[in-house]
Picture (tube, one colour):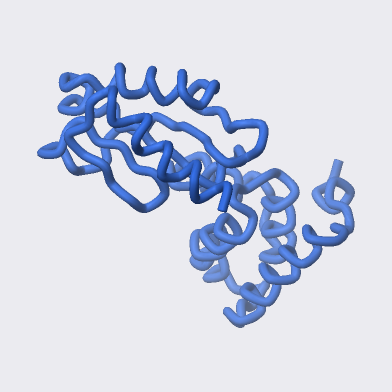
Length: 176
């Protein structure tokens, strides 16, 4: 099956997101015949993930078609870089560091408490799409171990009791 046959015309909100992505791609002035167009792929994928929240196959195919490259080149970049995700994330994305320093200081217990409180496992998203949990290898804040991020905010020197407090802040924001 060709990549063109796999894509479909997006509707509604999805169309608006594809239009936003196309506007961004157009602003780069990429020559589809130039081999340098692949140099913009990471930048485009970053913007696409910002717009869509993740990079589902239909977005990957769309980007490949816009750059006149094969879908496998796009998916190869996505699978190589940990930043990119092909799974949807919650509005409040929890990342629990399981690097050596964090693990030794009890990150596994912190993770278990987040999973218990949210009713999901690492790699999953709540049904309402408000929260998701992932395990990361290292956040780079070993002196603050164990460390968790929620969105862009870093929480360090955590214990299991801190999990409820952290989640309550975000749950109240979600309801507001």
